[in-house]
Length: 172
Length: 449
Image 1 (cartoon, rainbow over the protein chains, first blue to last red):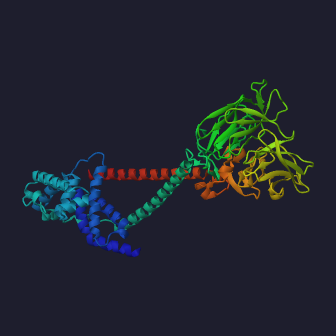
Image 2 (image 1 turned 135 degrees about the horizontal axis):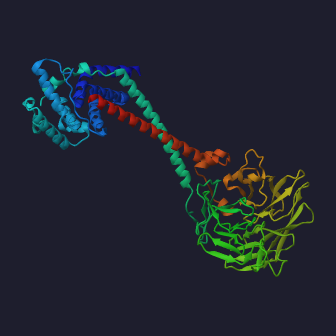
Image 3 (image 1 turned 180 degrees about the vertical axis):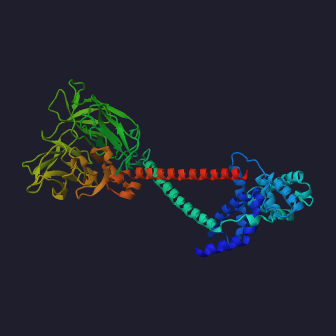
């Protein structure tokens, strides 16, 4: 049992940063990201001894996290308003950098959880459409349309940030 | 959108999002344990419910008749355990062959209930009007014909295979006025011929009070049957159609077995003598002829007034078996499994017994079939045809055999209640978890806004 804990802790240490970033990308909020990450880790821990060791645990964790993000939103009866506070401790740096990040954050916050999940997997986790569809349990065509809608919305909200955008149709 | 632009946004995030790894591990393992526990509980509940359903529905709704040599179906098995049954139902018109019957103690001043028993132990009650004190039914050996007093002025024979009912002009003796040509009385058994085509009934013509018995045929005919002696009581039919009687012998240790044809003409007689120290008291419940007509069982009182059953071989006149019959139900004839008699025992006959079960037991005291106490039986009878077949064993038999303790009759109810309780607890826990999750989600939303 102790070996399991140690292996788990070792794996978390190695993957914590990437997981935290994904969680934030999916929630747009530090507190929610921390909750999401904690729940994801608890689920991975519950399955730790039964995980397929031929695949990295991160793949399972990523699947769990993205589905949790969508499920959490589905369970809500009323969609909460997205209110951005003035204080954003995660947005370090100065001047134009901060403003640029604020715009991107604001733009991401306007996406639905599914759109955020698709963007996260496609453009941050670098998964293919097929892999993204597999992780989220949706069809490839749904991945395509969701990504296209998300990019369209981002383009409308923050066109400058998407100058280097990957067109949805040209994505791998 | 590019990976770099997202990276740029997220670069500081890991400094602020710091999970509690130890707590995550503990939570995960706790969930595993809870999931396993829940799984075990759910599996237990499912098994319990399945067992209960099997027990409840195992009892057949209709009996699959086994064809007899003449093409008419006959009963081919008997139950080890009779009842319990959640819902009591009336005997349908055509249930098919049945294995036996149970007479329940009167619940009011003069009411007793007749239950017919299937080979799997299912019971049906037979409505019989309102005034019947110990009017014993008679079930043919193949379990297909049931004769009983159906009302104050009607004796009927029901064909349980075809549903046909034949009525006979026989009144009970409880009324003030004579209403039918024949009169019967309670507390005397009736006997089917082995082929199930004739029935000897204790009755007399009102115009001839010296009569004691009549023979009913299947077409509604009733004809008087003279007894070989005033003390005579019928104890059965031989396979070749002779009627066996027991009459007083020359001493209290001796009885005479008399064979007559179905018109009362004597064919043969044989003395049957019990050992020294025993005393015979011939009455209508004492004595029964085996289905093959080769043996007779007689009850005699010993020196200590204990009742002993003696089995006589009719070829030699010798006693071939004996055993204690003190617990025998007093108003009930013996059943036969092969050439061995079985006596009904009633818990009412010995209320001090530590295990007051009711059922059929052999002379060696071995229980062959037991009856649920809720039926409150004072007589339990299984036909020779049923007892010649296989015993029907359900989950109750696998678990308890012929035990008659409280749990053996109520285990299915106990398990059902336990299963439902477990399901209720699991449901409550699930609802609680969901509410807690919803509450957490609401808190998070509130914190975010």
